[in-house]
Image 1: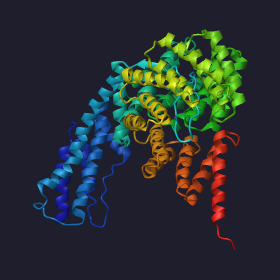
Image 2 (image 1 turned 180 degrees about the vertical axis):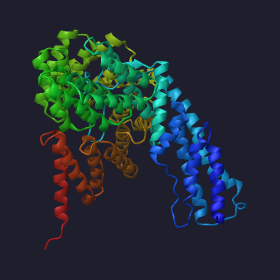
Image 3 (image 1 turned 120 degrees about the horizontal axis):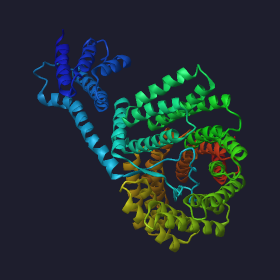
Length: 627
């Protein structure tokens, strides 16, 4: 054995001992070290890989708890990192073991020691996050209206999120917190998730977890659920509540595989299991796998159910929701349309579920600029809500808010104002003056006033909404960031730039802390701050923010998402201002194509981009030399 091999083997062995804090895990780390030592020939690359199946089998044989299994994954990653660092230390410069100082060796141990310490700190951080935010907003399910459209603002600045004013919030029990913690730790063990994304991922997992547990409970309480499905659901529920997603998924997949070879009843049970499987994928934030499972479930139901069965509509609605939230509007559209047709025919045109489908489809039409079609659906949904729930029900407020946004877009300002005011009144009666949902409704009304230049009416509403969010929500809650952005926009419009800038900066900081540096909503906050800099001539400060926002949108949103087009156009306008039309041209062409694909050629945003694109092309043609 060469000197270098002796040094590395000694280091590897020491590192193995340093990082192994879990009883029995030394069996695994020893194998990793041995594999590395077998590849120390100078003509070969260091190899610290252990086949996934072998690694999983070894961990399974150790019979570790869920938490320790997750920690085992993380510690193995840390060990591999330390091994590679040790290899780099000696690869270029052969040393003696004596020359390898304690300080250098300590630097290597940091790779494992810090990882373990970070994991322990993470456990405390998870507990604090779960305790601090006693209620997690639950994302819309298949029976929840999709968020309505933003009130129109300036080209570069997003004025308000204008989300649905009804937010379904479910308190987290201690048992749920423990399960979510296990799931999150397991996810950290299997995926390389940057630390700044942890709060965002944890909140999303918690919300999806709540949805799944509630849906399983509803299915268990349904008298039409067959006994076999109830038994399956009980097994899955037990696994989920213990944080064992892998066991839940294996149980469901085995059931599905067996049911696929059996009768209609079993096939439909398999479709239900696929829905539940999709829920588990959503908890893991794996939306592509969730969509595939829902597609399979829908195909089964199409095979065995009547074309007008409400269960088909529910299945289509689930798929439409997944695609809509991902910005895949063309994929979502046929599912929303078919779901509405079925519900109208089977449940009647005035059923509450029909109102849900009306709102879903109207929201999509609204996004695409198909305002007349959206209008009829929004109005019908509001009529159904009034008949079914009453004038002062929160669901009625949601429909009021949706319709008000569209009226505002169409220039029907007096009608929009009445609906915004009525929605706020309902929220105050239903939730109280100091409730986050009431604050969201205040923000919607304030944004209406703001967009029409009524700054004096908007200011107290924005300020009160911000106070409520700061009082009742976590200091890093995304809704607080929205309120800060709204108020900053108003201050800037009033010429109070000194007040506006720190609010923009604070909003961006909150978005980074709560959602992560690469979240699309964080990109919007970057765009707001960049637009502030741009409008005040601080072009060099604006450019990196515009560029980073575009990178985030291109990486994390669908390639045809309108927000990506907005980021492209923001950056293009910056280049135009600098006279760099050649750089602006491809950005504008890409933005125009996205908006043509998603919103259509008659949408105002599409027409605006085409106008800018035409101007840039004319500038380039003028500058071309003549022959």
